[in-house]
Image 1 (cartoon, rainbow over the protein chains, first blue to last red):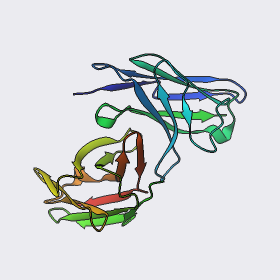
Image 2 (image 1 turned 90 degrees about the vertical axis):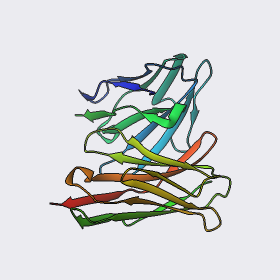
Image 3 (image 1 turned 90 degrees about the horizontal axis):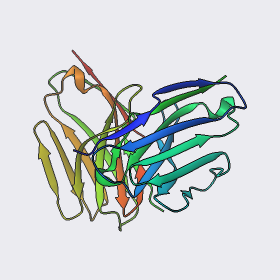
Length: 111
Length: 110
């Protein structure tokens, strides 16, 4: 079946630094990937849609300059949280359109 | 845009009993309705899905029903086990747009 690998699973960074999260489709090509954010005990909120070879489409209220998305190949999409602040601490999850398979998530803690 | 409502927010059942979670959606164009199970600290896992041309689908202890006219769909888990304890999310999707319900925290007491 379709497998999406997400790394890292946990990351702690200092305020002001940037963090990159990778999402890879292991056994299929994903022209479209989705990035979600999930606060504790809440649902998944779509942040952006990542399209291979073109610019990502961001949801209303999501700062594109803060959450940089790159989808340079058919198997890899990355989300970079730039100049991270404590309020960016959250659980970030990617998914691929193929079967809507989700990655295992990344717990980001900004201190 | 699509709006998905999910009830109840928490559900506690005794092992062996059935659990039912219900969702409603607003956009009649939605044609794909997946259900996900999310355990603590992990990504959601697809457990069953249904498309708008089907009214019911079953996979062992899990079943999903869809009423397109009323725009609601439900997840049924029979013979619940402690390992079924998790947060369950419903979703409604059309093309690239998938929206999730708020989630149901299911606790199965041994």
